[in-house]
Length: 158
Image 1 (cartoon, one colour):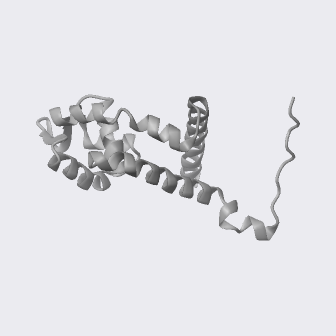
Image 2 (cartoon, one colour; image 1 turned 120 degrees about the vertical axis):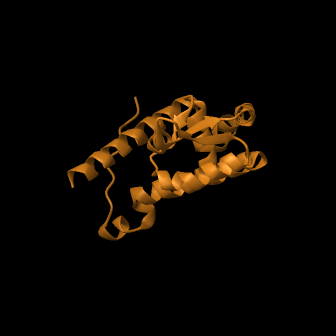
């Protein structure tokens, strides 16, 4: 049985170094992840955010802008230019909801459905780039989701 590691402590000087900040570890890992996706998405003419939007749309039928924004934890105005580019590429169709013309309905087009088949190898490419097993990746995602939930709950208390 491995011996547990003693708790780490940092001097006041070390505590102020960027590399000892959780926020920096998350930020720099996010940048590295985006860079790892870039060469995989470039041949498909997709940005990382466009890819995430398409994943959200593929996993659920026609959806509206507000639902996709909520699922991706973005505000609707941030998504609008992304959706316009996806529409211009022929992957998404945006229409007004006949029941509520303030709501934008998003539908994946036939070209968008064909794109789904082309992105299948991306997850394997990221798994290779990260050298994570499926179990490690799932564990890390679970921990990050918990962290996000705790941070959001902490913001609500302030």
